[in-house]
Image 1: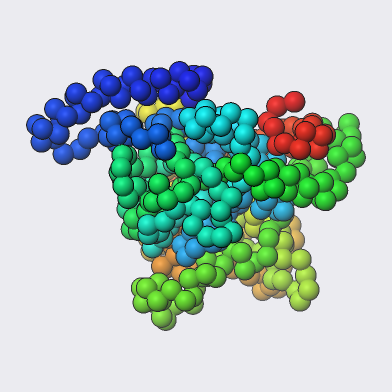
Image 2 (image 1 turned 120 degrees about the vertical axis):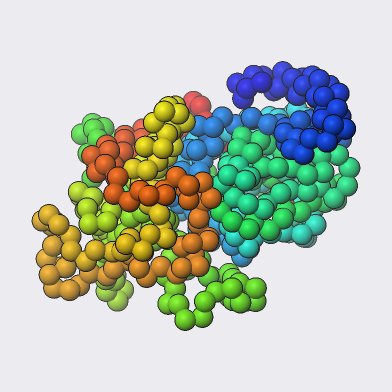
Length: 473
Ligand SMILES: O=C(O)CCC(=O)C(=O)O
Ligand SMILES: [Fe+2]
C-alpha cells in the first residue's frame, strides 16, 4: 500500500490488511506480546465510520520536506509550547513558494476525507497548518468544533510527520470512546475523523523532543474556505510577476531570488504565550538571561552560531547575518536570520534524504551537521577568520551582536527543540561539517526556491480565476 495508489484501493487495502491482521493480532495479544505495531492496532480497530487511520499515507520524503518548511518558517503557535506554520503566514513572510509542496498533499487528504465520509466535491479546506508540539504541550478531551468560532469545522485530519519514541516522547493521541482508542504517531500516518463530539480526543503531554504534524480542517461552508483568503492575500502582495520573471532573471543569481522576511519579532518569542503558565515558570531556571528567539534557537540547534549588525532604532529588523560553525565561517552573507535558517534547514533536509538513501553513510552524514548542544566546548567564537566584507569592519569596531549558543536559554536549547535521535547521533562528534557541502546546499536551495517561485507565477492566474489553490496548471 503506497501513497500513489488510488484512494479507493488504499482503503480497500487497509480493510483487507485489517482482516488479515485481526487473527494474528488477537493471537499476539493472547500470547502476551508487549509491543504490537501501531498500524495493526489501528487497523484492527478500524470499524467506526466516523474515523479512519491510514499508515504510510505520506512518503518519508514528503514528511521530511514538510518538516523542513516548518522548521524554517514556523512561529510561536496558539497554545503554550506549540509552534505553527500556516499558509497565510508563509505568504505574509515572502515564502508563498513554500505553500506549493503542501498543496498536492492537502488535495490528497481532502479527497480521502470526501471519499471516506461520502462528501465528494462538497468540502472546502478551512485550515492547513504545520504544527509542532514541544516539551510541555498537551491537550485534554475536546472535539475540534468545541468553540462558537470553530463550529464550521466539520472534518479533521492530522498527518504525523515524525515518530513517537524516536523524535519525541509522550504525545500519544487518544479517542475517548469507541474504536481506534490510541494512536501512536508514526511518520506518514494520517488520521481523519469528524470534528464533532463523536470524536472527543486528547493528546498526552510531550515529555521530550518535537512532535511534528500537518493539521487540516474541512468545512461544508464555503464562507470559511481558506483558499479565497489566501488568494486575496497573494493578490494584495502586488508581486510584479512579469518584471521578476524577465529573461535576465531566470538564472541562479541569488540577488534575484525572493528571500524570506521575518514576521514581527514577538512571533518568534518562545515565551510569548507561556508567561502565564505556572508549570513552565517553575521549571525554568530563574537566573538565566534567556534568548527566546525561535530562529536563533533553531540555528543553534543545528550547531551554528550567527552574528548580525545591531538594529538601529527604526531600522528594518531583517539585517544581514553571518553564520559560523565553531570557528569556521560559512562563506557569504545571508540577507537575514530567516534566510540563514532556511538554508541551514535545507542542508539538514538534504542530509536526511541522503541518510535515508544510504544506510551505510547514515551516521557520517548526520554527523557532518548536528553538533551536541551539550558540548561544553561549543561556544561562539568572536573572531571571524577570512571575513573580507562588511562584517570584518564592523567586528573590528565592536559592533557585532552575538546571537550565539552561549546566550541561549538552556531550557529552550536542551529541551524544547531537542530531538531524541540527535543525542545518539552526535556523541563524540564536533568538527565534521563540510563547508563545501553546505555551500552546495545553499546553491541547491537557490535552485529549489527559484523553481518553486516560477511555479507560483505560473499558477497565480489559475488560482485567481478558479479561486482554488490547485497545484497543477
Ligand atoms: O496533534 C494531534 O494529534 C491532534 C491535535 C489536536 O487534537 C488539535 O489540535 O485539536
Ligand atoms: Fe483536536
